[in-house]
Length: 277
Length: 251
Ligand SMILES: Nc1ncnc2c1ncn2[C@@H]1O[C@H](COP(=O)(O)OP(=O)(O)O)[C@@H](O)[C@H]1O
Ligand SMILES: [Mg+2]
Image (cartoon, rainbow over the protein chains, first blue to last red):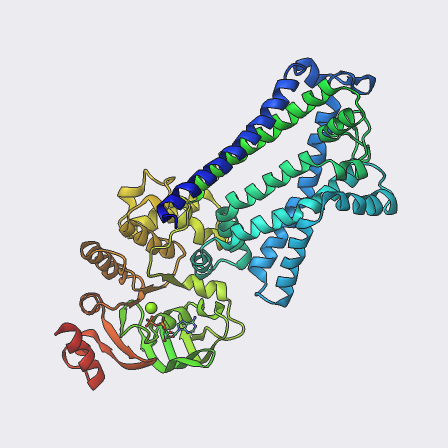
C-alpha cells in the first residue's frame, strides 16, 4: 500500500507537468509564428497592397477588410444580443419558453462556424441576393457570435443585486429607467467582455468569411463589396503555397491584434469595474 | 381631523399566507409613528404596501384600502410613480447605488423628469443640508457613495428620499446596521425632519421607539394589536400582549 502523502506528491507533479505543457505550447506557437513572421513585418507590409496574389507587397486591404467586417458584425450583434438578454432576464419569468430559448442559444453556440457559413451563403449570398459581400459576411458572423453576447450579458445582468432594482422602483423610477440607469451600468463590465469576445471571434473567423464575404483582394468601398480578411489571406497564402513568409507575416499581425484586443478588454473591464462598484 | 395616511381594513397576502390581518390605523401629518413587534409580524410588509413596492413580489394581494390625503392609493387610476415619489422608502441596509454622491441624490428627481443642472444642484444642497451631510460632502460630490461610512450612506439614502420631494418617509429598521452612537444621530435627524414630514419607522429597538416617536403601534402575527401615543404604549398598554412584549423587552 502506498501512503496518501505519496499520492499527494504524485498528483501535484502531474498537475504541474500538465500546466507546464499548456503554457509551453502556447508560448511555442506564439514564438514560432513571430519568429517566422516578424522578418517580413514593417510599415510597408502593413500599409501597402499585395502584389502578385500576395507573393509580394503588404496586406493593407486585408487589414481594412478585417476591421470593417468585424465592425459590421458587432454593430448588428450587440443590440440584438444585449436586447435579447435584457428581455430574457428582466421581462420574462422563468418558464418553459425561456428555457427553450436558452437551450436554443446554447445549441447555436455549439454549431461549427462552417455550418453558419453555409447557412449564410444560402440565405444572404444566394437567396437574398446580397452576393459575396461585407453585408452577407457581417450578418452571418453576427449570428455566430450572438449566443456568446446573449449568455455573457445575461449572466452579467443577473448578477446585478436585486435591491438596486428595488430602490430605483421605490423612488418612482419606471422599469425601463431602472434598466437603463441602474441595471445596465452595473452589468457593463460583463456585457463589454461578451462584446469583445465577439470581436475577437469575428476577427479569427475564416470559414464564414470564405463562404459569405468572399476573398477579393481589394480595399472595399461599400457594404456590398467582397473583402478578404487577414485570416482568409493567411489561409489562401499557406494553402495554395503562394508565400509562406507572407503567410507568417499575416499571422503575426493577426496574433498581435488579438493580444491587443484582449489587453484592451482587460483594461476596460478593470476601469468599468472600478467605476461602478 | 384629517389624517395623512389611513389604513382601512387592510389585509395583505403572500399567496395563501395572510401576512397582514385587517389593519386599521390613522396617521396624522408631521408625526413620527413607530411600528414595533417581533420579527416576521408584518412590519416591513406594511411599509412596503404603502409604497406599493410589495406588489412586485409574485402572488401578493391586498384587501381593504390605504388612503393618503384621502385618496385611495390602490385605486386603478392611481399614478404609482407619483405615489412612490410621495411616500419614499429607506431600507434596512444602506443601499446607495454604485454611483457618485451627486448621482445618488439626483436619481429620484431625474427619473421624475428634472433635468436642469441648477435645479438639481439646489435640490442636492437642500437635501444634504437637511440630513446634515452638506458640510462633509459638498467637496465630495463626485466621490462614489459606496466609499462613505455606513452611517453616511444611510443618511444619503434618507437624503435621496428627501430629494424626491416626498411628504412621507417610510423607514424600515434604518439603524440596524449602525452602531449606537450613529443611531442616536439618525434619531436626532428624524426628530428634526418631523417638522416637515410624516414619518413611519419600523424598529425592533424599544428605546428607539420611545425616544423618537409620537405614536407607536405594536404588531403581532400580522395583527395590529394596539396603537396609541408612545408614552401610553410604554407606560400603560391596554392589551396584555403589548404589555408582555414591552416588559419582556425592557425588563
Ligand atoms: N416575499 C414573501 N413571500 C412569502 N412570504 C413572505 C414574503 N415576505 C415576507 N413574508 C412573510 O410575511 C410575514 C411578515 O414579513 P415581514 O413583513 O418581513 O415581517 P417583519 O418586517 O415584521 O419582520 C413573515 O411571516 C414572512 O415570512
Ligand atoms: Mg422587516
